Length: 120
Image (tube, rainbow, N blue to C red):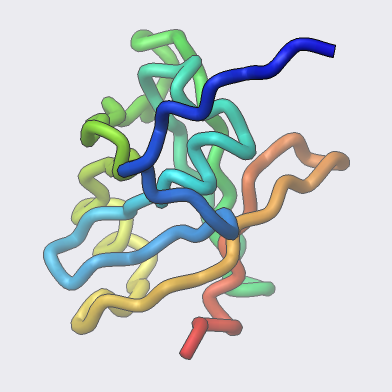
């Protein structure tokens, strides 16, 4: 077995999390980027389920997909998307920044943010 050199000493990694920021952006931590391979995509399409109060996110490379939002990559510290219109249309509170776990739903194929369960 060969040794592999560890070189990412400044990288932020950890549990995949998403934040809904008070400035109307949705941010994904580096743990989410690494766990779900978000860096392979350039866009996201957002969905909202008002019955369950959940956001569904579909990552894509298709910039022509209806509703596609450009991903903004931050060096070794995650990804964000501008979502003011989305948050306003669906009346999702973004008056203060809140964090949530991010999980993948195999049935729908979406990455799910359960707005009923913010993290402390």
